[in-house]
Amino acid sequence: MAASLRRRNALIGLSFVLPNFLGFALLTLVPVLALFYLSFTNWNVFGQADWTGLANLRRLAGDRSFWTALRNTLYFTGVHVPVTLVLSLALALLLNTRLRGVRFFRTAAFFPYITSIVAIAAVWNMMFSPETGPVNQLLGAVGVAGPPGWTNSRDWSMPSVIIVGVWRDLGFYMLLFLAGLQTIPRDLYEAATIDGAGAWQRFRHVTLPGLRPTTFFVTVVLTIGSLKVFDLILVLTNGGPGQSTLVLSQYIYQKGFVQNQFGYASAVSVVLFGICIAVTLVQFLVNRRRSA
Image (cartoon, rainbow, N blue to C red; front, side, top):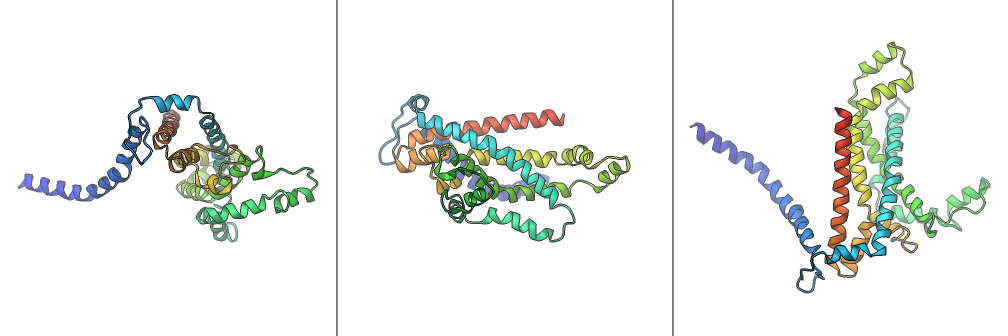
């Protein structure tokens, strides 16, 4: 009787887990394993995948476009992550108060995140237009001589992409911080106020420690998303001017789906996968050390 009950419970449990596992295996696990295999071949979709060993990795070492894409990816991530993190936290703190019309401002801040990326690119390209864009006209009105060329300039194209990226992602991460702020007991703030703590001290000793799990989650998700940025750059600058905004995801797309070099594109994907895993592990280790 007991064995029959255990078997029945096991079958019920498997019936819940199995569909999700099958979906993960078919849509994620198998493609990832195939990616690792293809990275050691010269497969071009139309023929047989010939095993080439480490040839793709040796080719990467001398590929200037790959190193440019890697450098641009790290540049975008290194600026986009901290700026988005700080601004989204500041916005969440501002909209966590009893401000009049706070629901409207929360909705307005989240709106860019659900807006079509194509529409965002069209509007910002118009705003960044060097000759007729409102951004340069505003800079000229306040006396800025020689305003930037924004997306038409090699020097300013990546900062332009970062500005748009921060603007688009700000609302989503603000919502995560807002949810985290709701979990901090109000008693802690009242106790700190009674003890004479000022606003900065309450933020430093109550808010930041209370937000540590949320901050860690946001940092991990934001970093991985920044390393894999693709759609924003594709529709905003298409990697240009020249290769000034070419990133690894777009380079993988070019090699795989434009030039049919799926073996080489898989090798680049493995490098990007390794970077994401390494950065995430470092973040987990740092968080564990701080929580100890």
